[in-house]
Structure formats: structure tokens, C-alpha cells
Image (cartoon, rainbow, N blue to C red; front, side, top):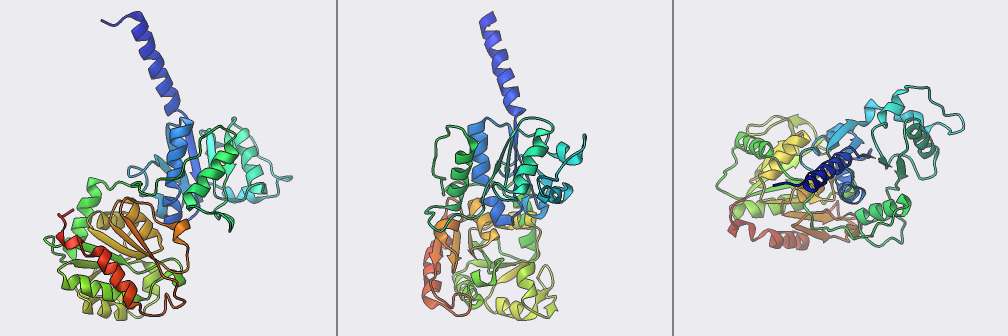
Length: 371
């Protein structure tokens, strides 16, 4: 039988939980998919150490739309839906009227972290002014690039900056690089299997997805290397699907629609992929990419946003780094292997030795139980 003290304690617990759930934070992240994924450990850190009930993210919806329901991000807002450009005005001339939409945009948040603007800039000062027009809240501006002497992962740089600027006695901790940041949904898996059926992938075989692109051409390992890896995998009875985005499609002309392919694919690349015994999916929305990756037993890619997504989903990920630093930008995930090439011809020549290293890292997939 519950006593009055028990009931009072229960009510206090419920009140405390309601207060926690009412505390909201937001992160302004204008970057691409890889930048957004590498922000997730900071969002998790904020939730755990600040007693926040929810964390929102403001960014480009084509990159962050997948995060709610799959990560620690609870809701998203389009960066284009807020007049943030106004915050870049000179702070001495900046002013807001009562009820301004900018004030309302931040009225619900007690912690605001922005990767837009720079520390001690007009943007930061105007954002602080805007927030304080409605309530008292903490505003922290983080730099996106660490100094040259920084030794650690980018996510550590984010958390160290946050702790240093927060004014709180928060314990510094190194980000766990083996964390699974994103969880695929049942709908993702069903969509992935639907896409694979459309290109006649054999579900009785293991599947490796290869994404040979990246936002920067210099970060792309020469295409022939990926094709050679694909050919060897198919000889071992492993299904291989190439995943191509708009950037890769623009690099090859003219377009050609081929049987068994989901969209117009450049003719030269199409023939090379077919010759390697692989299939191809092109220009998929990010939700479909999640679905495809959720069905994969392995993934191979460059230092790219899709590689970060595969790693974050827990897929066995092989990441090939050229000019960028893996110590700083390594994908976070429970099954990530990184190969670093120091060749000046990383994007321009074949690399047979590195091909064999990748294959050795993938060789056990065929013998493992199906995912």
C-alpha cells in the first residue's frame, strides 16, 4: 500500500521528468550529410549532460530529414524556413520588433549551438540578442575546423569547444568511435529489399554496396580500383551494387537508361559496372539510401557523407582515405576499417596493393551468417 510519502515522491519524480522533457536544445548545422552525422555525438552529449528532453536540428532537410526516429535528433527544421541571413548584419545596426519571426524561431530553446557564423562575430552577437528578446538561453558558436595542432577526432573538437564555452563543470570525455549513431527502421529494411528486387539482386547471396563518389573529386579513389574490387567480390559469389549520386552522374556523359537500372546512368560508367558483374542504383533520396544500406553486409566508399551514413548504421564499412586525415574525419561506427593512401595519384591511378587490402578486409563476409 502506498503511503503519502510514496505518492509525494512519485509526483516529484513526474514533475522532474516533465520539466526535463520541457527543456529543449537546438543545433544549427548548415553542412552536408557527413557534417550532420559527425554532429550527432555532440547532440547526444548535450542530452545526457544538460538534462534536455529533446534536441532539434536546423539544417538542409535533404541531409537531416533522415535523423528523427533514427538517431538522437528528435525533430528538424529547414534552414531555409528561417531568415537567418538577417543575423549576419552589423550588430550595431541590428534590431528586432516585437513578435519578429526570428524571435519566435528560437523562443522554445534553452540551449542553442550553432555551426553557422563564427565565435565573437556579428552573427553570434545578433543571435544572442534575438534569443534574449524572448527568454534567457545559452548560445554557443562552434568552429567547424580545428587548428593544425589539434590531435584527435573532429567530434572531440566539437565537445571540447562546447565544454569550454558552456561555463559548466562538465567532464571531458573522448567520443566512442565504435558507437552506432543511426538505427534503421523496419520501413527502411522493407524499402531496401524493394529496391534490390527491382534490380534482381539475389537475396540468397551476401551484398556489398560500393559508393565511389565524394563531394570532392580529389577524395575519390580512382574508379577502376572500385571496379576491380567489385569484380573480385562477384567472382566470390557476393552481390555488388554501386550507389551513384548526382555528383557522380555529372562526371559521365551521355546518359543512358539500361534494363535493370533504376535511373538514367552515364553510358561509360554503366558498361564498366556491368563488366564487373555488378548492378547500380542512382540518384536515390537519402531515405532510400538508408534502406539500401540497412540490407547490406558490407560497404566500401571514400571519405564521404554516404560512408559516414553506412558506418553510423552499423554496416561493416571500409573507408578509403586519400588527402583527408582519417584521424580527424574517421567515420564513427561499430565495424569500421580505414585505409589511408599517401599516393599523390590517389584519384588518378590504379592501386593493386590497396585493392588487395580491401578484399582481405571483406573476405570473411561470404562465410558469415546473413544480416
